[in-house]
Length: 161
Image (tube, rainbow, N blue to C red; front, side, top):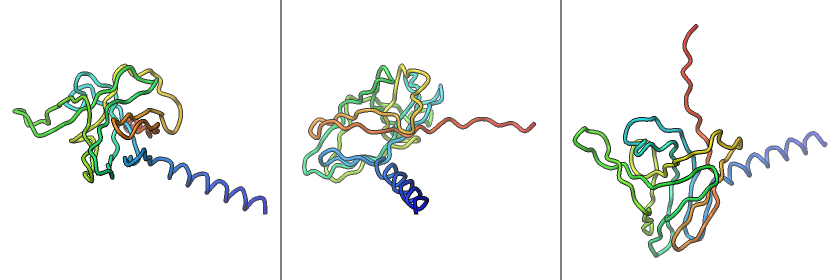
């Protein structure tokens, strides 16, 4: 009987972790935040950013809200970066902003190849050895919420021996 209880407890604990990776503060829904280390070149590493975070954001309010700040003790600075359109070189153009507007009913999908992301500078190494790296998102109207970023480790190059 104890064996089944331990299995049930382990399954329940795992399910809680999976569910806890989505967040909500007031009318703002935040889905599965994750981050990756950036290449040292290209628009996605504009201004020598070291890491970028991605997550879907959705405002269920009747009023526009704004993501205005990101706080954490593992980085010196965070900026909002939008990769939009293409420049003369055919590459996306990096545009920095002081905030990300969350219009009512309009999802913001952050992704590596285009659109919004949060970029980090002065990242303290090594990163915390936890499943979810904590940071706080600050919204103008909805307030603050601590979220956990899943670390997406860089792919290693394995050469055949």
